[in-house]
Length: 226
Image (cartoon, rainbow, N blue to C red; front, side, top):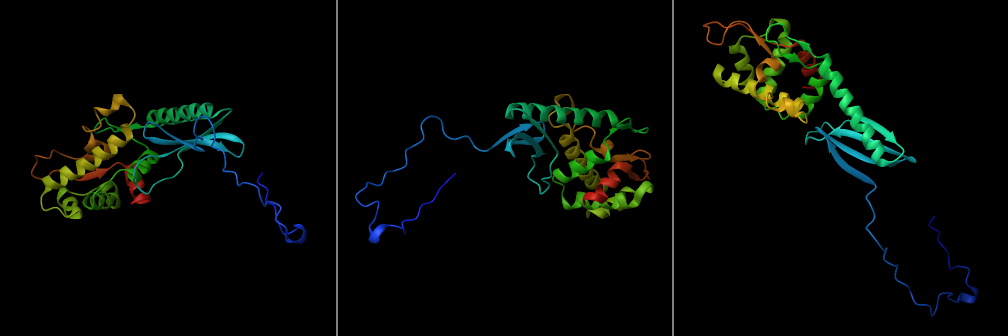
């Protein structure tokens, strides 16, 4: 505890410290003081750990540069290392449960992420204004979806080809985020951008291809985030 002393009680104005050399504070020997909060990474998350309220705690946060900085998970332990290890287990178990809970789309055979996964991904990936416009219009269209022409208009595109390319890019960004930290999924992250978002009746080569329809989980996530 730091204590402060007053010289106002000195007898007859005498300075009790007169004639004494002012000593410089001694430099601490050994290694520099360790920061109170340690930073690390696990998968796509930033890990912060340290002593909190007398207990060692480790917490996971999104590591992206977006405004979404909410707490993802936390764990405690007898030591800081134990708290970090426990948090890694929590994150890994959470990821495993999420993947196991994904449904398989009947039309494309794609494993569709759940609502919480989509909400987290949309809050972290960088989407352009046209991509956001298309996703929002498609989410509002519900199960009926939109033809490519209207989807292109929602994004401000003059051609369906440009709209499709941008739409696919949004799906690839979300897929890449969700695959981050899982090497077995990294290779496929860029291949299923469209099917991760939804599906379209008919073929793109048809004169009148069917509407684009977003997965219901994604529709709900867009309304919650965008």
